[in-house]
Length: 90
Image 1: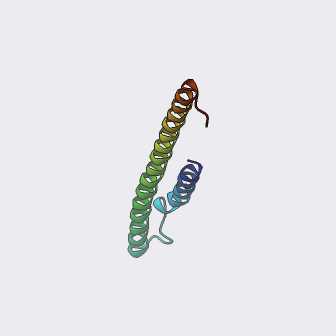
Image 2 (image 1 turned 45 degrees about the horizontal axis):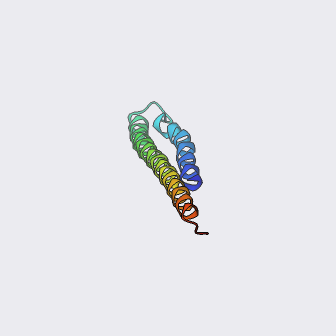
Image 3 (image 1 turned 120 degrees about the vertical axis):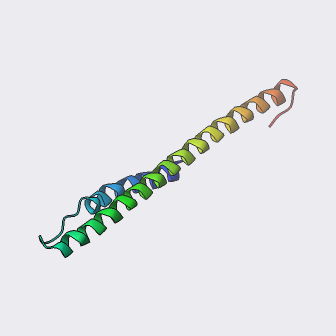
């Protein structure tokens, strides 16, 4: 779980950096500068969307692992109790 959440945090941090691309301004007032900035902003928005999807995926995977771990622990406790109840040992 920790690794998935750490990875999700990295994607969130990258989103903050990508936000700069999504807000880029051209270096000059001529058409070429603004056209270039439009392309950079579009790339920044696409990058932001991708990073957001990756963060959500990692958070979902961490949640799945947490759920599975809880189910595993519950099953282990149940089986341990049953074995002890029948007089067995682990």
